[in-house]
Image (cartoon, rainbow, N blue to C red; front, side, top):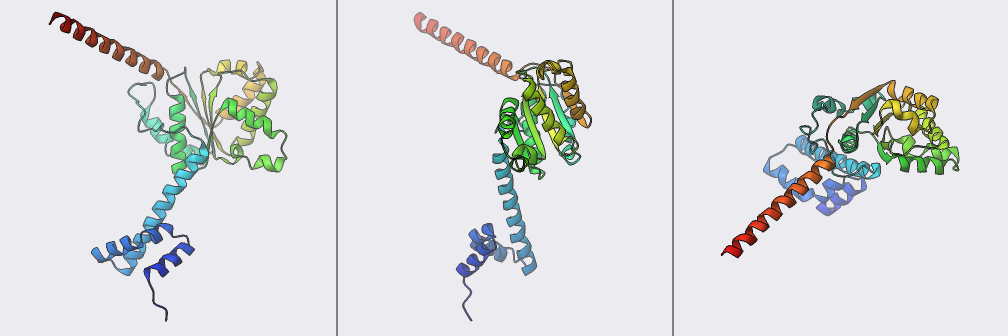
Length: 270
């Protein structure tokens, strides 16, 4: 009978894709001895560790594939700066139940109030809950849709904006779409209607959407009809984060210059 060594065990673990256990076998065995674990408890420990590491790797990979802007989380969103936003409502949406029900979220408000931040943060939460997510600014998404008009339907069906359970479309309304672009957008929303979820951020009130979609009121109403049927609409009214940061930077510079001026005067007097 061949001698069973750690190297042999590691090789077998690697063959069945238990990579974490294979890489940390010595440490896990030491922990089992220290804690005097039974065979059942040891087996449960290594399986738990393996599943946790796999979940961490899945989240990292799906975050990378989603193209979500990094660093925007619910934890670092300052709800006190935007009191018009219900923190409880956002936390409810963070459970991603709306994705399970194929519902939509529309964030409306002027530039800089946190629409993109919240959309991105909810996208990251959806990934944690096991859903595929794709983030695109409207201009980039329209470019993809235009390119795909020349592709075979079978290849288009496999595109990420169709496969994602949650599609985040940022910056709707900054630039108006042509009639052709608006038509492509309409067909995308129609295809996702009641099948998967969309988060949209827009600086335009709904009454102004015809201007966004080639001045076509019928087209705008058709798009809104599908988006709003099962939706959560969040209007954000408040100051711009970017203006706040600029004001803080100006104030910091002013205080710094005053201190330097005072210091220079004190040196001159001495």
